[in-house]
Image (cartoon, rainbow, N blue to C red; front, side, top):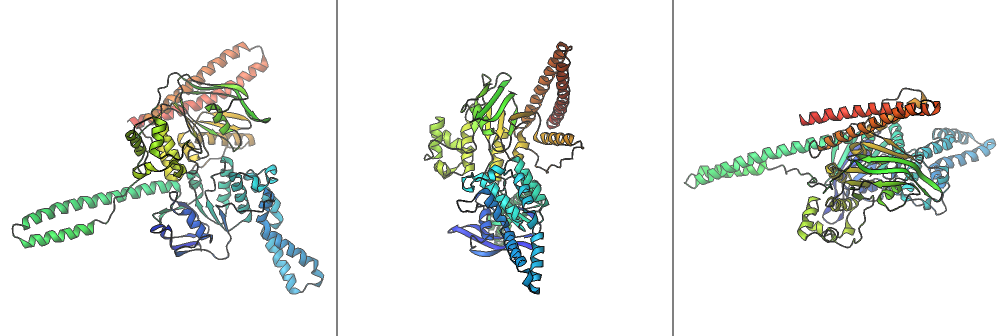
Length: 632
């Protein structure tokens, strides 16, 4: 059965510029389909047509009749006196209506006729099957999963942030238990825990899902088919996001080979036609006719346009040479606001070449920690210091410029003190060409502003790059582009992100901020997830479950083996530091040999350190083997 049918759909907002141009596809009942495409490709326009908010110029978009549709896109407007609890309660309006009718029928039961009794029985069955008796249980379950606390449920809905309103709206739609879900960037304002909860919910959801998302990990876990909107039409990929990446590249190479084959044949025929024309001048009309026939054949051959890709970054960061092993040290670092402690007792040490992901739920203090590093805030306790040769570059989540009225060229002239030609060359390397360089900064999209900021950062001499949600609100192409830029950077990297695809690609160390502490895990994100699974299993006394990771595109290693060499060197330093600590603990054990309690503490620390050293050696050996393979 078809749940969503789109046929010959066309829509334009500017004359001559069709955003949708004959779009055609269908989604069958129970399918989970990812809708891909650049920002502005028409994905949200399609959703607005499906929900009846917009009318198409041509074609039609239909949802199966009688099926409830839930849209997570726009946040509905509610009366100003509504609390979060009131908004969530609207999900049960149909159940309340049934409950009121059941009450009326029960009150008139003495005088009820056969028809009223049948109505009561049917309504009772519908009320029960619709979850009427489990409303509170379902409400609490969904609120716990999306971290809507009892205190938050008592707040006024109008007072919430945009991200909080999105979570409440998501909870309301899940509670409505609709048969078709239209998801427009559902993970944009969710932290890692809430996103994982949503993925688990969708894995058990029996209905149909059509999702617009730039969260590639989410797409890998949730969707089984992808539809890409390109030039207003649909391209189909029968797999998740990783399949889409590989298949799209295969199709590109196939089209490129076809184009090159056609061009080689065209060049061969053109050379032959020119010779025939030359010989025809000597008086042979038959040769002239053959040349004319050959030229017509050339016209028929030229059917494939040259396939193109967005140009990748061709420049690297102007990195400052790093001297010494110390990048950053914190000692008993703590921060509190108005009596609320965000974190305390944070002891961390960062050495050269490390790439660290700072993770944690929303509101735990990640951005505050970054502001401490940037000197925008002072800690309420403890200290932090940078190495003497460290120079920091920072890409914020929301990029702003002091003079948004300036165009791109003038912005670089003022900020970098360069010549107009140097400014244009740098902008061209970042895909700002032609008239684009004369745009006002205020007219740029979020992805373009991030790209411009990176352009400015890359011209500076930095060796510690701090990124705050670098891929948030960017489309897949822009995320790929920024990842290409970061992969070329060889200095230290510290980033805050909820984008698990980005985290998995770049993190070699994980700092998890939770329970007012920062736990330090030396390893990749996948290794961190496996370690978390083991910890949960040990706590329950059960074997750890096998974590099934989504198939992912093989990471790009721009710059040959440099990235691997960097990771091997970092792993070697980590092993050396752990072994030094092991020696210190052995010395300490001798000193406290007569103090049973102190000796027990040292022995426990030695045991934990032995496990860490075993893990570090395994990682070092794996990276070294991979490096040898890359060199060989």
